[in-house]
Image (cartoon, rainbow, N blue to C red; front, side):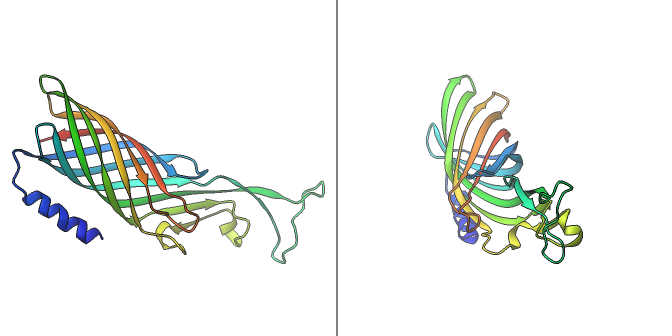
Amino acid sequence: MIRKLIVGLLLLLAMPAAAQHLQMKIGGGFASHHSDAKLVGAFKAGLGYEIELGQHLTVTPWLTAYAKGWKDKDQVVKYYDEHGNPILNADGTQRTGIKSRTTSANYLEVPVLFNYYLRLGASRYVVLSAGPYAALGINGQQKTRGDAEQEGSRKVFYKTSTFKGAGVHRFDAGLTVGVGYQFPTHITVGVETDFGLLSFDKSGARNVSGLITLGYQF
């Protein structure tokens, strides 16, 4: 799928157009899952090639490194000894703890955004953007604390690879939507959101993120 997208992008670049511009963009914000997961920090950096389709309309294929993630809802867990017997507190109640898990997921993302320019003044525009994206999970870590089902030091803390778990899907696809303000200096400041449409795993959780972005058009 990623190969087909790259071929399609190359065909777009070969199209004759009235104007073409190289762009770069960075952004920072938050990411999570469409579930009861909590927010974590997110970051992206990418290069795009904007192709003019009309007086106000352009299309920009991007190649982006995108750091997403989420924090699972904390769980109350019960502690048992090596023989499976409950570990008790001094008052006779079973000892419990909090299990927490934070996940980082780094993607190589290929969005294709259609942009509509609303002119506000000399070289000043509001830019409305939307389009599909496809992404491939490259790496990431799940950090787990307080997992009573583990043994030894893993009860306290351990790490696993994000994309090597059972039922995990590396491939993601969805919709990117954004709005920005372009200054006469070719700098654009905006906000942008990714809505994942494919499940990350069997739970049905999907990626979602929101960023403040800073772009420059060469």
